[in-house]
Amino acid sequence: MGGYVECFKLGKTYDTQKGPAVIVEDFNLEMRQGDYVSLLGHSGCGKSTVLMMIAGLNEITTGGIVVANHEIDGPGPDRGIVFQSPCLMPWMTAYENVMLGVKQVYAHASKIDRHDLVVYYLTLVGLGDSLYKRASDLSQGMQQRVGIARAFALKPNMLLLDEPFGMLDSLTRMELQEILLDILVKEGVTTMMISHDVDEALFMSDRVVMMTNGPRARVGAIFDIPFERPRVREAVLEHPEYYEYREKLLEFLAEQDHKKAAVAG
Image (cartoon, rainbow, N blue to C red; front, top):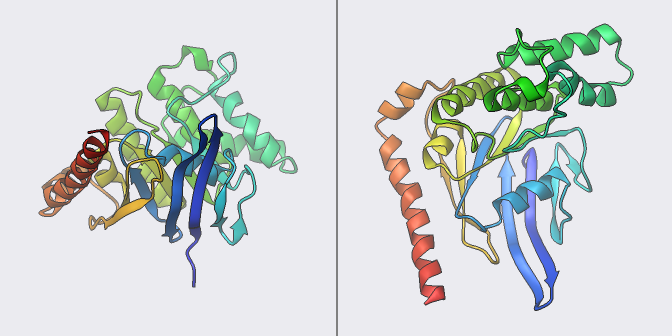
């Protein structure tokens, strides 16, 4: 039996003046329902390209993607996306920003049901007291909370996170990581996250997928992360295998650095 999410022989090629540029080649990955997988690798290795193909926002050149028995052929509400910058309508309130998508996806739901859904998820991310504040008046961390609430409110089969904490200070980042993990325990949504941060990937993930350098990037290694859920940061950091796994991920990245230098030399 296949996985809940399957990427098989996935590839992306762009036409350039110098000829075809193969960014991702033969990328294969299966995810179980409820999995949290992080894609880790150096800049330019095709992590975001893979994520955008799964989101349906970047056309697939070769291979295919199946999510919940449905082959992807474009964007859809079954896949929620949180970007590094939440892309809110600045003149709208937090409530209105989340309601935008809810109205489209739940067009036939009652007004009260839609209202309750929006309030529930904004409260879940800690914005119960800021429902009617304009996005432009919210801090960067609060705006990202709105983005997370907006993604969950659409009840997606899969959540796609493109470095969602990359622009935040370290305290806000840690707080939002924990909020997101708490919601994922409640919701059980299958999640893929792009990250540059080894410690973030270890704390958040069930598996970390290491990508080789581009061009022609592919899966280079997959590490199963053994820490129990729900995750407590102190317990993860004190786990006897934490630094062993951290070293393995850093070694893989260092190896890719050496390969890059050898090619450049």
